[in-house]
Image 1 (cartoon, one colour):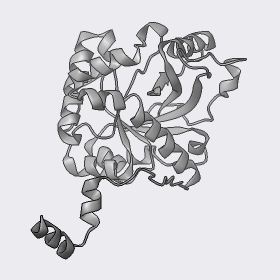
Image 2 (tube, rainbow, N blue to C red):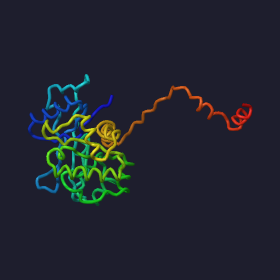
Image 3 (cartoon, rainbow, N blue to C red):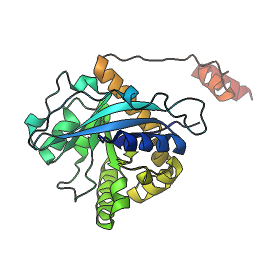
Image 4 (tube, rainbow, N blue to C red):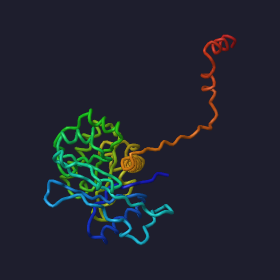
Length: 268
């Protein structure tokens, strides 16, 4: 059974509202959510601090609908970068489970794809994409295990933003072919959340296939989480399993040397 995730729940100082959004996500069937702290270093008095402890939100975390376990809550940092100096990883970055960057220029987008130590690259959804996606940096990000994020909440709030979201998403899909894409909410209120299967249908408008749409809210999100864990520890673990299934007749035939196989065919 698929494990659904929403890796973008907008942080608010209103704890009651934040709790309500997370409770709604659990009710809709999301097993994991990430509280997103957005920092725009171009604005004055903006700095990267440590995330709030998630244990302050709940005495007991809500149970996921259809599951027997509580929802998992991660902390995420999103850096809005309009200058290369805005993204300088330090000790504060490691305090977050996930690190994302929202590049505002083509040069920074290229740097984010090829060199920035991040898990997620955000795609504009509230404005027209200021540059075209090029295949080289996009493929570079895919090879590095970095994922592109499209948030759907702006498309719900406003018809103009809906056009931007769909147009920018389709532009990305034409370049990445649906690979390494995650879809998140960016929700600030419970009513802005949608169920996983509603999202799987919604992303068809973004140019994703049905299979890629489901992966964008499940397996791809899981891969982002694992990428974040490896980024924090600089270590990776490879799991291997021995295949116990018997060989098929075709495989057995392929194991027979070519000379012997030719003699058998002649005898037949």
